[in-house]
Length: 215
Image (cartoon, rainbow, N blue to C red):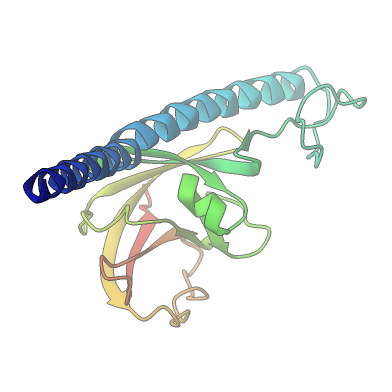
């Protein structure tokens, strides 16, 4: 009888262990395979919508209709037909999108830095009210997306006017999370971006500086 109880206890323990392993494997599959795929598909849909909105806004300008920015979250169906349509991704305004050929990255660039925005895409940390592809420096922050990049690699940024510029990385370094000295660097009129992401241990940040090369 005692052996039978012992055997039943082992069976229950084994079942619990198997269930725990199945749950753990399912969690890993969802977080590292399914969830990234869903986010990638959603990002591609947002980027396609962004491009469509640019085309529509530019067509209105060509026809002689002035187009202005709009803060309406719907982005469509405004009473003022002359309002510039905005694209939203996960509830955040898209300023443009970034393409990194070396790492096959293509993500929306959002206008707000929050835990939710950084869990879905990249976002502009500096300056406030940023304009992409303009003289000066724009800091773009994201999770673990730039550690494989090197000096000389290319980064493409498309803005909400439809302009897409190619940036060349010219410096890469690590620094503390508190270091913001590179935000306000003098670019001497050059168009630059800074990519900022945390190291694997999250103790420091990887900083990448890139600029649009003059023709």
